[in-house]
Image (cartoon, rainbow, N blue to C red; front, side, top):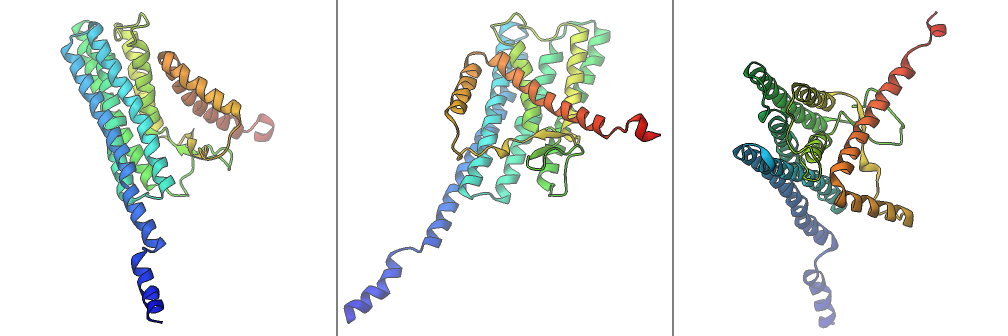
Length: 299
């Protein structure tokens, strides 16, 4: 009788409860998404470092290599930023601290780093007349600053957005969309352009050396800044469930895509960035044409 009582009273104390084990597990796994956020922030810092070191190279192949490394670092930051959120959701360790920490890291990696990279790559090494070069550099400084402001505003709106915040041109109800161009996509487009032209495999090693090229580059940076704070809809990849079983053809296609990025990253990454932005522009134009009444209806 005493042995039975002893066994009953000592059982719960010897073995932890399942609910306590789940809590301790979640507290432990919360560190994993934060580590990916730290790695994302580290890539942003590395991109800033390489961009600043490119100034000391005074142009040429060495400067192009530094800028190419900065563009690649931004690409790795995009990959890490996409992984920390998914890991937090899979492990059930999402928190307000993690969301704010991720946003602050994104301001550096996808705001300050690509803005400085775009300014230095597109304008700093221009060999124009002083009358044109100085005002153009001032305009580049202003547009780069607007890029940072747009990125910070985009991230703040994303953190405060609720179910009522829908894009101005809604698509299919079963699809998830971003309201405004995501900051990683904006930074990725800038990095993809720099990576394409700074690659040693192409003849476009030097930054823009013409007034037309500089003006086009500034117009692109300004357009990206507007897209980040706009209400245009951009495709969200949150619908993709990695735990769902796929056909073998999908696995082969993903493998070929990864191999293509590994061997032809300059062309393929730029193509993917252009297609992603192009789909948003197509949806916007389609929505505007669909809303426009015909002549028969207006009369």
